[in-house]
Length: 152
Ligand SMILES: [Zn+2]
Ligand SMILES: [Zn+2]
Image 1 (cartoon, protein in one colour):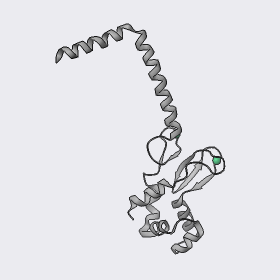
Image 2 (spheres, helix red, strand yellow; image 1 turned 120 degrees about the vertical axis):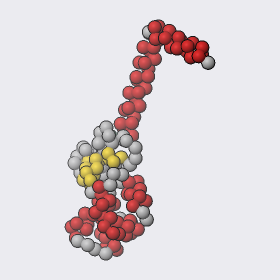
Image 3 (cartoon, protein in one colour; image 1 turned 90 degrees about the horizontal axis):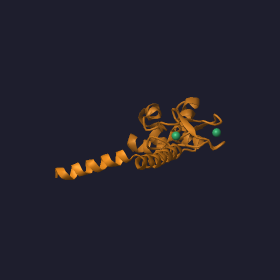
């Protein structure tokens, strides 16, 4: 498994909502996620394996699997060649650019995307209104259209 494939699995499985209160989680680095509402800390599969190794020292894969509940193939991949050191700070673990919560892909979380979409929709309505209320603007557009067709 390449680093890319391993990261893809980790990101797909990363926690995004708090198991305690349902609040949004923000990525703190090294596989740890903190709830923005109650401060509860959750770990992804990488974080679970990492924390276990930090607390218990190097252990064989079956022991790590038994202790963390992380699937065996992921543990094997994480224990390979110092990946546990490098993967936690990888850039694929992203936060929403707007509110800072953990997201799996894109730039902003679904909540913020919805807010932005509503804002755009509102601006479009307002824009349409302004367009209708300003005859000068309409005239300009028509002129430009005429100019455009004349050019051909
Ligand atoms: Zn919470
Ligand atoms: Zn957001």
